[in-house]
Amino acid sequence: MKMNALMVERTLSQIDARVIPEGHPVLPQLNRMFGDHTFFLDSNGLNIVEPIEEAPGTAETAQVVNLANWDDANQSRLNPHEPQATDVVVELGPPKTSAH
Image (cartoon, rainbow, N blue to C red):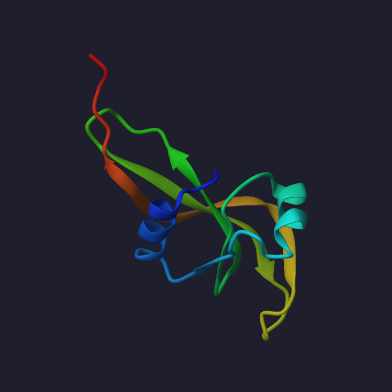
């Protein structure tokens, strides 16, 4: 999921991570490998967030999905793997309203 600036800000207020900014030289490679997403780095490695389907009236939420783990203690190399959903859920926006 590609996130807007407000969603990124809300996500970063809930998880201890940093976003890979637009224009970063590694983004084209990440997009080729994993698709067009907003990418986050944390102590576990490389992550994205994927929306969770919620009922109308509940907040828009997303689950953190880990794509690669750090391969060394210096956090200088990532080891990609199959996407793994984590237990971390972030609130992205206000409650959705049902369509009338």
